[in-house]
Image 1: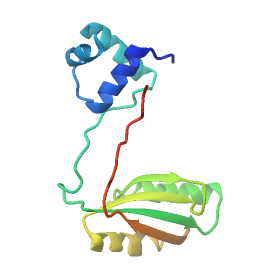
Image 2 (image 1 turned 60 degrees about the horizontal axis):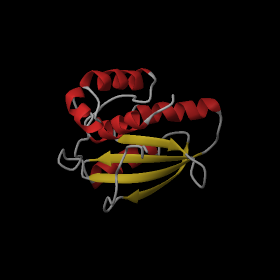
Image 3 (image 1 turned 120 degrees about the horizontal axis):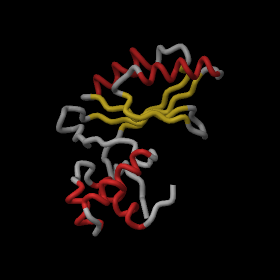
Length: 153
């Protein structure tokens, strides 16, 4: 899809505020609300906009513990990786998971209420998993930047 400057401005505005109405969007983009609506619908249909959500404050909701976990599997193969993917999908404390290059097979972004809940997850769920051979955790002490958007320009 070829994006023009109006589309890019729409994307940047919606990334800042996904609940923005087409009327409010029209003021930012300098197009009519109906033109913004048509462009927004086209961006959604093309899959450029894959959805909308609210960003919640994890700490205010009682999830004050965040850790980055690097996981190595004991062996590889499609069925073993599928099994680990099912494990990841079934544990809501794993907020993001990535298959990566480097010294780990996977990197997990984990949120729990506290250190005890984190230890419970690691010792009772993750380490006993039959595909897991090594786990290395880093506790997040301070978040400097957590921008989940895309730099559109």
